[in-house]
Image (tube, rainbow, N blue to C red; front, side, top):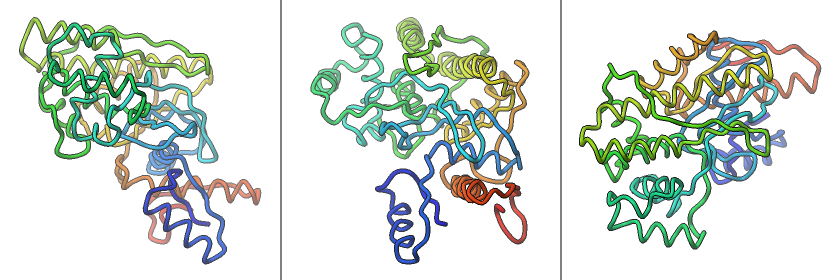
Length: 318
């Protein structure tokens, strides 16, 4: 079997599809965030079901939208999406990854603050026109882009030199002694998915910016709020499923401040937390998860028992 990402336009996916055809092999397309979850499970040699807290910049979701702030449940054989961010738009599409002021302006629009703040006065008109047209502004639930938007709104940086720079700069700016959080909401939508509503957070953040030019405290409060929200959603998922093990994966967890805050909060609420130890939480680690998922599919077809081990001399996963 050959396993690859669900997104058909990745070079790796194109190569996998071509090679599968040439060799007559089954091709397994593994959803990006499910692969992250399976990767962390395999890294920790876990079996059974877990809650996956998977945060990164982008990955094609099973509904055709761009995911990136996901709460999943499942095992190597499959997953269910249980939680996510309130979706927002990326004006300009891929341009918003580098011109992160576009994300900041879009989030302000979600909060209804486009007329009230002068932070993006020279650019808001452009973003408002793009959002109104609905063209070139795909929906996303990306936690990576939420970090970029916060970085922009706080005035730390308006353009990014590389993917994930917003998260790096927020970590550098944060006051490590701050324990405060912003207000936020968690509500279940019509699809039964728990949604993190960040609009109260950004409304309060704007007030902080007006009252104080310092960024250390609001940067910390932003990430503290994410940790509090994570534990709340995981507790609600535990009530529904009985699952009390959580795995953390995705590029956002390269932010050590965020990683430690989320871990500490989950453990305080009774969760057993697993983090990457030998395999990257970033995209270079998802091949392990793709392999584990493909192996589980094969075992399911043949009725064999699946055993997962990481870093052996003979195989990465078997």
